[in-house]
Length: 124
Image (cartoon, rainbow, N blue to C red; front, side, top):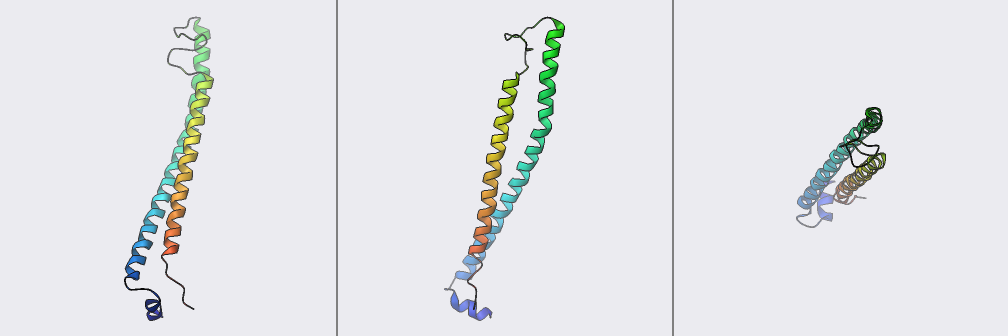
């Protein structure tokens, strides 16, 4: 059976198939690692959202309780962020994580395609 596959392929094809297959496996592995990294970043982002929300509420309460405000914007403390700013930051982070996850999944898919393309022709 191995002799039949040797006859169907041109000379030098087994080395090229092995190189293509191994490159595909490496690309697939890198894609999977990137997907895991994206999941970790998403987990960290969603853990950080509570901190952003708690900080907004604490700054607004502190500024009204103290009765003074050193920031140029009324209702905010110097160094704090408004609800709109926090919403924009979180939205951009979610969009970036989505884009990174999409690219990582494309990379993993391309690795699978490369492995499948270099499997050799099936024998009948």
